[in-house]
Image (cartoon, rainbow, N blue to C red; front, side, top):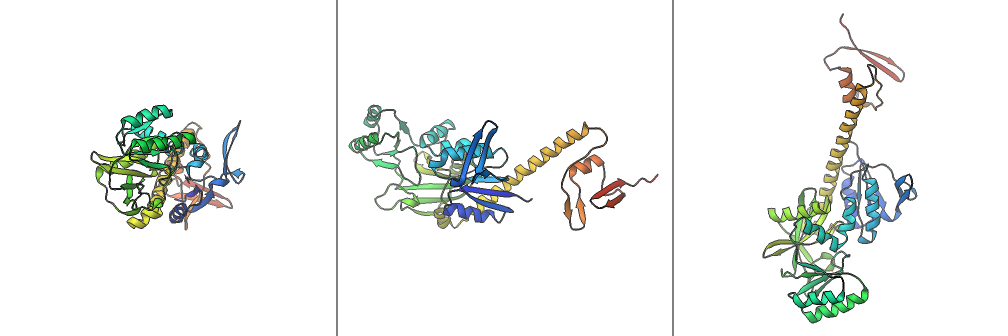
Length: 361
């Protein structure tokens, strides 16, 4: 099956890794810069443009980027997913790039996570800080790679942070701190399985285990329950591809963060698993299934139309020429009632082929 794909991204190394891997499976793989994409909304309907021109038709589009582009990514996916398979649902970009919305969605789907608090004012936040146990984690709603995550080991420290955060006029989350020896687990979910997982350990004096924050990763074999939590998290957010970060608490794994545009270098190096190839293979398989389903649906629709058009029908289609053979589409074989056992008369003219079943009478 000849399939055409595009990757819309900011051109990160991880995106380039995926594009290279996809070239082994798709006939065409175009790399499109997210900054060159816009969505034109008119009275006739929305349209995705690339460098000012209508976006080409693709069977698969993998759109990804940072939280700063979440509204644009949501708009692109909302329009383009009507005709192309896209591994992330439109609202995934809004929810997945906002920690508050992410935790609310996870709670709705009963995904285990640390106790989390959100307050509207500094006064109500101080009341929360007075009654919770320390240490705690304070997070900005947006941010990736461990940025915007702060650690407070006492009420005094948390109050000082609160004063600074209030001045910035940004909402933030307060979350219970779970002691794991400054380690966490990152699992890459592709489809309905975890294709790679690593344990990350923060460098000395650092609480964030992110590779970009100096953390060190090593291969990790997750158990069935942790895989269930990771895959359940991805499905709750509407993501066929994402990274799920978890902590191993005394009560089992808890999800602390989801990254819908994960870096692949660190986990590829740590696990020696070609994660980009896993993603490319999945995208090709999923796209093929969707395209095949669409073709069957279209064929069924043609058959319904043919059955109501009388005895003589005209079908517009492409020829599938295999060497010296022409394969008839299933809809033609079904309608003509011809089989490979029948003897036929073939009349050939330039630009025309007429096939009739040989009558023995």
